[in-house]
Length: 286
Image (cartoon, rainbow, N blue to C red; front, side, top):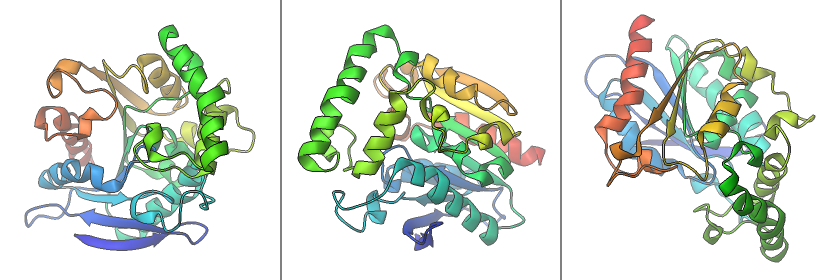
């Protein structure tokens, strides 16, 4: 495993590693994996190896404040969620373009890794984009039954936890401690009609600027994080893309469940082939 740091747009080091294509043939393309909120890159290791076995070079990386890129306590880390999209994703894509200038570039984003993708200008130059369980987080786009849970979390629980702990601890449900700025961006956008697309401080033109093929995968039992309404809300921002949206039945997952994270939890070639075969077809078309 090739471990190294990538300097973000403001100089912060981002931990990364390549999972190289197996076999003697040149890689079909370079795939950049954008992780979900608070999910370290190692979570996607088996999935990346599957793509490697199919002939792709895959770059895994940790956003600032997460995994091996967490170089200071979360309470002291000034990271924000907008940093992840505007600075970190942009720096990673620039690195891959410089490392493999003649190779096709594919992006796979899970959850926030997908819905932040348009904040990085270089996303518009990608040759293919895959969004897995990615949707906007405006609470109005969720089933009505989820509204009490979401509003309770955004209005009551998160402000209280941030006031007491100074960050969002791992036990709060995201699996990794989140710096205060990350949690605050997430909360502010989620309470705003239109999510991050209504933030006047963000340049969101990159979503419409992406004009390539886009595969969106949503899970039939992902009710709490990326239900169909939230996924469709995000896809409406990619006005120039050639979109294919597939909803995967929960029965295809482990013991009939997939949810928001189950796509990557166990080695499931039937699930992963949705991505590897689609990317393979894009690589061959090129």
